[in-house]
Structure formats: structure tokens, C-alpha cells
Length: 273
Ligand SMILES: C[S@@+](CC[C@H](N)C(=O)[O-])C[C@H]1O[C@@H](n2cnc3c(N)ncnc32)[C@H](O)[C@@H]1O
Image (cartoon, rainbow, N blue to C red; front, side):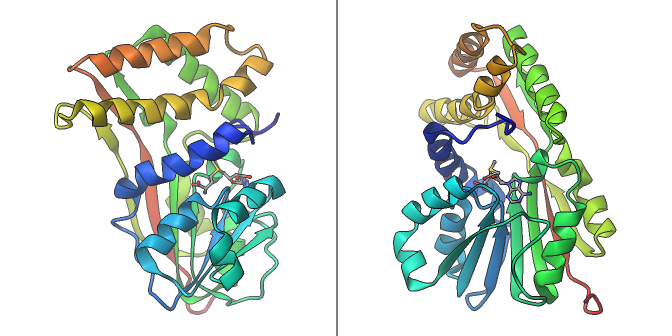
């Protein structure tokens, strides 16, 4: 298993629920037009495609993923849209896209570059298939910005192991901080680059909402548990201890939890080929 989150059924379901949960944090700054043809690289099970369709009603979304089983699930999640031609799905590597130059009005990538050593070849390839002036949105994690109060030893030790494995597998758990530099290296113009703090504190008063918020992050963290256990990087009882830690956080009115990400909007320069 060389992908930290696994390609299991439960992970497919988690990605759908995660996209719905994060929609209110990630999408207010995103804008595509109703006639746009849009590309998503690393579309997974089609979770972000569902959000994009809901919000912008674009002409077409083309989803690309390197893992064919993910695309089977995306097809099952979007059967009508695929049949009508509103959504197209392709198995391909992000750095080698099967499209002509200047094909798309816009493109986006969410939660993919954390798995890559270097995102620049993928961004360069996205730029190639964008029309001049095309918009590229990217949202990526900053795992060192995760803040848990009151901290628990189990969550802290687990998160350290998770990020070590992400790096060992050739990824970058703080890739969000590299987005602006990577887009510049790929020859794009950076239009905006902002933090996306996803945060729980005393402003969130509804107990059901607080529990749901923490449960989403518990599942996100534990999505790496099978890969960590397989490599003996955590003790067998560590996932249970992490869950117990989240249960304590859910019951504590003093809890503060922040998950950090960065979002960029980069534009293809008119003179780029
Ligand atoms: C964490 S999932 C995110 C899926 C989707 N963007 C979302 O937010 O729900 C990352 C996806 O990126 C895909 N992926 C990783 N590296 C890729 C690459 N170089 N080219 C294409 N797909 C890639 C993986 O197969 C996986 O489906």
C-alpha cells in the first residue's frame, strides 16, 4: 500500500462526505462561469465534481485520476451526468494529460499534491491544456498547522507518524505552503493565495455540529491507520486511543481544533503556449 489514505470502500465514502463537509470553507472564493469547460486533476470518486456542478452548472467537467477504481466509483456517483456528457472521466497521470493545448477554461486540484514530491510538472501540464487567461484553483493541506487543544499524547504521536509516512511515500504534508512558488515555477501568474482555516472553538455552539466536525477530522486522520499499521509505524491500539482522544475533545467545551490549508488562484499567462 503506497497511498496513505488507501483505496478502500470506506475511504471512497469518506471522500464524498469530506467534500460536502468542506464545501462551505473551500468554495466561497471559487468562481467558474456557466459556459466553462473545467478540468479536475485527481478527481477521485467525483466528490468535488458534485460540488462544482451544484454551484456553477458548468458546460462540462473533465475528471482525471491515475487510479481506475476511483473512476469506476466516480462513474457510479455521477451516472446521469456522464451519460449526458456533462462529466467526462479519464484515467491518466496529472503530468501527462491526454488533451490538446488550450482545451479548458478552468482547472482545479484539491488534496492531491500532498501525495507528490513535486507538483510543478502537473501544474505545467495543467497550464498547457488551459486556454490563455484560464483560471487554476488549487487547495492543499498544511499538516503542520493542525492545532488540537487540549492536546492528547495519542493524537499528537499519531499525527507525527502520519506525516512521517506521507513524506516517506514521497509526498509533502505541508504542500499547501508551496503552492505559490510552484505555480510561479510552472510559469503561471498568482492572482490570490490565502489560508483556509477550518476551525472549531467556542463560536461553534451546536453540540451536534461540534461532534460532526470532530468526527470528520477523526476519520481523516484515521484514514492513514491501515498504511501505518502495515508498516508497524504505530502500535495496534493507537487508532483506538486516537478515537478516545477525539471523544474527549467532543465532550469538552474548551476544545479548539484547527485544520489548516492554503488555496491559490493562478492564471495562465496569455503568451504561454
Ligand atoms: C485524497 S484524493 C482527493 C480526491 C478529490 N480531489 C477530492 O477532493 O475528493 C487524491 C486523489 O488524487 C489521485 N492522484 C494522486 N496523484 C495523482 C497524479 N499524479 N495524477 C492523477 N491523479 C493522482 C489519487 O488517485 C486520488 O484519487
